[in-house]
Length: 239
Image (tube, rainbow, N blue to C red; front, side):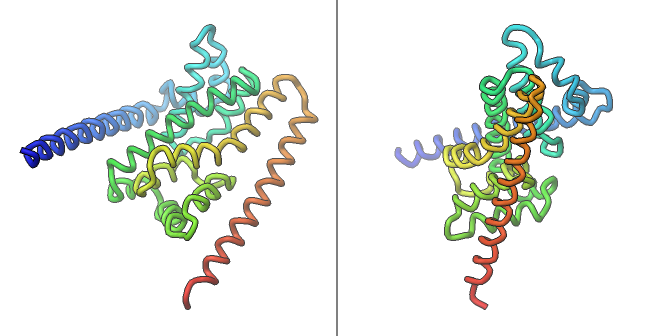
């Protein structure tokens, strides 16, 4: 009787996983079809800051909802840079609300990528992620301090964070750990983008330059730290 119950439970779990996977695939295909149409709404959204801003200015709850949706799409379609939507969020909504709406969209998109990677498996992920990206995540997860290494990768400017979310779905990391680590690591760069957008709306160019300079300094420190960490790992490996 116990084995029968387990069998039914396993079948239900497989059915739920299959439905989720089918939904993700269908959603991904639908998004891809819309995006690759030359005159599509999404393509015009994410390629032109003026168009993004015009939708974010919609009245009521529509503006914030557009902000969250656009940021979600940008994370899922990781080849599109996120700075446009993040700057626009700060420009239209200010620092607090702009950061909140953007981080919600980023986290939702990141969870989508994470579960897609987990359900699709490495063979499928390999079709649209570079071997270099997968190798970066693999090396981070194989280090002695895996979670700190992943945090460092997401904190480091210039790394393909949205793409790495797909690769992290292949790991044993729980979704809670994933959200905490990547969310905290993404927050500083996101806040900087939102701040620049907010200061631009007020024509406060002095503070814009200051934030930009701080971002460059922080990026340099993170880069040097990451290089030092990698060299330390290589020297500690047996020859």
